[in-house]
Image (cartoon, rainbow, N blue to C red):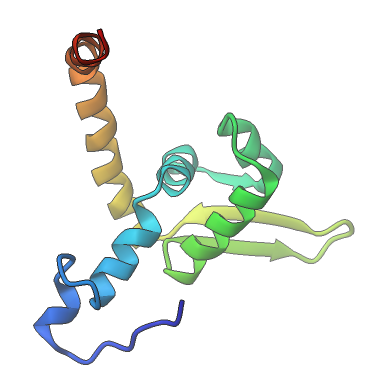
Length: 126
Protein backbone atom coordinates (compact mmCIF):
# COMPACT_ATOMS: atom_id res chain seq x y z
CA UNK A 1 0.00 0.00 0.00
CA UNK A 2 1.38 3.41 -0.93
CA UNK A 3 1.64 6.22 1.53
CA UNK A 4 -0.89 8.99 1.17
CA UNK A 5 0.41 12.53 1.14
CA UNK A 6 -1.21 14.95 3.53
CA UNK A 7 -3.10 17.54 1.52
CA UNK A 8 -4.12 19.70 4.44
CA UNK A 9 -7.73 18.63 4.05
CA UNK A 10 -9.76 17.94 7.17
CA UNK A 11 -10.84 14.73 5.42
CA UNK A 12 -7.30 13.36 5.86
CA UNK A 13 -7.91 13.18 9.63
CA UNK A 14 -11.31 11.43 9.38
CA UNK A 15 -10.87 7.72 10.25
CA UNK A 16 -14.34 7.03 8.85
CA UNK A 17 -13.20 7.91 5.32
CA UNK A 18 -11.69 4.98 3.42
CA UNK A 19 -9.19 7.24 1.67
CA UNK A 20 -7.95 9.16 4.71
CA UNK A 21 -4.41 9.12 6.01
CA UNK A 22 -5.83 8.81 9.52
CA UNK A 23 -7.49 5.49 8.62
CA UNK A 24 -4.23 4.19 7.18
CA UNK A 25 -2.42 5.08 10.41
CA UNK A 26 -5.26 3.68 12.51
CA UNK A 27 -5.12 0.44 10.54
CA UNK A 28 -1.38 0.20 11.12
CA UNK A 29 -1.39 0.69 14.88
CA UNK A 30 -4.73 -0.92 15.81
CA UNK A 31 -3.62 -4.52 15.47
CA UNK A 32 -2.90 -6.91 18.29
CA UNK A 33 0.83 -7.17 17.67
CA UNK A 34 1.43 -3.42 17.43
CA UNK A 35 -0.57 -2.85 20.62
CA UNK A 36 1.35 -5.59 22.43
CA UNK A 37 4.73 -4.29 21.22
CA UNK A 38 3.93 -0.78 22.42
CA UNK A 39 2.72 -2.12 25.76
CA UNK A 40 5.78 -4.37 26.15
CA UNK A 41 8.23 -1.57 25.40
CA UNK A 42 6.60 0.78 27.86
CA UNK A 43 9.30 3.10 29.14
CA UNK A 44 12.06 0.57 28.51
CA UNK A 45 14.56 -0.02 25.75
CA UNK A 46 14.62 -3.63 24.60
CA UNK A 47 16.55 -5.72 22.13
CA UNK A 48 14.69 -7.78 19.53
CA UNK A 49 15.02 -11.06 21.44
CA UNK A 50 13.96 -9.47 24.70
CA UNK A 51 10.91 -8.00 23.02
CA UNK A 52 10.04 -11.35 21.43
CA UNK A 53 10.31 -13.02 24.84
CA UNK A 54 7.92 -10.42 26.30
CA UNK A 55 5.16 -11.15 23.76
CA UNK A 56 4.04 -14.75 23.91
CA UNK A 57 3.06 -16.18 20.54
CA UNK A 58 4.57 -13.54 18.25
CA UNK A 59 6.66 -14.92 15.40
CA UNK A 60 9.98 -13.49 14.29
CA UNK A 61 8.32 -12.36 11.04
CA UNK A 62 5.39 -10.61 12.76
CA UNK A 63 7.67 -8.86 15.24
CA UNK A 64 9.94 -7.67 12.43
CA UNK A 65 7.04 -6.43 10.27
CA UNK A 66 5.36 -4.61 13.13
CA UNK A 67 8.57 -3.02 14.42
CA UNK A 68 9.28 -1.71 10.91
CA UNK A 69 5.76 -0.33 10.62
CA UNK A 70 5.97 1.32 14.05
CA UNK A 71 9.35 2.79 13.16
CA UNK A 72 7.99 4.05 9.82
CA UNK A 73 5.13 5.76 11.63
CA UNK A 74 7.55 7.38 14.10
CA UNK A 75 6.30 5.48 17.14
CA UNK A 76 9.39 3.32 17.75
CA UNK A 77 13.02 4.32 17.47
CA UNK A 78 15.51 1.70 16.33
CA UNK A 79 19.11 2.15 17.44
CA UNK A 80 21.91 0.07 15.93
CA UNK A 81 25.11 -0.01 17.98
CA UNK A 82 28.27 -0.54 15.90
CA UNK A 83 29.56 -3.63 17.67
CA UNK A 84 30.13 -7.20 16.55
CA UNK A 85 27.64 -8.76 16.52
CA UNK A 86 25.42 -5.69 15.97
CA UNK A 87 23.25 -4.74 18.91
CA UNK A 88 19.86 -3.31 17.95
CA UNK A 89 17.57 -1.73 20.50
CA UNK A 90 14.01 -0.44 20.32
CA UNK A 91 12.36 2.26 22.37
CA UNK A 92 9.15 4.25 22.12
CA UNK A 93 9.31 7.81 20.80
CA UNK A 94 7.27 10.62 22.41
CA UNK A 95 4.29 9.91 20.09
CA UNK A 96 4.66 6.20 20.89
CA UNK A 97 4.57 6.99 24.61
CA UNK A 98 1.44 9.11 24.06
CA UNK A 99 -0.22 6.20 22.23
CA UNK A 100 0.80 3.91 25.09
CA UNK A 101 -1.38 5.97 27.45
CA UNK A 102 -4.37 5.14 25.25
CA UNK A 103 -3.36 1.47 25.08
CA UNK A 104 -3.04 1.39 28.87
CA UNK A 105 -6.61 2.67 29.02
CA UNK A 106 -7.73 -0.13 26.70
CA UNK A 107 -5.94 -2.67 28.90
CA UNK A 108 -7.62 -1.23 32.00
CA UNK A 109 -11.00 -1.38 30.26
CA UNK A 110 -10.37 -5.03 29.36
CA UNK A 111 -9.52 -5.93 32.95
CA UNK A 112 -12.56 -4.09 34.32
CA UNK A 113 -15.01 -5.73 31.92
CA UNK A 114 -13.45 -9.18 31.44
CA UNK A 115 -15.98 -10.93 33.67
CA UNK A 116 -18.92 -9.32 31.89
CA UNK A 117 -17.55 -10.17 28.45
CA UNK A 118 -16.78 -13.75 29.48
CA UNK A 119 -20.33 -14.20 30.85
CA UNK A 120 -21.84 -12.68 27.69
CA UNK A 121 -19.82 -15.02 25.48
CA UNK A 122 -20.89 -17.98 27.58
CA UNK A 123 -24.59 -17.01 27.26
CA UNK A 124 -24.25 -16.34 23.53
CA UNK A 125 -22.42 -19.60 22.80
CA UNK A 126 -24.68 -21.66 25.07
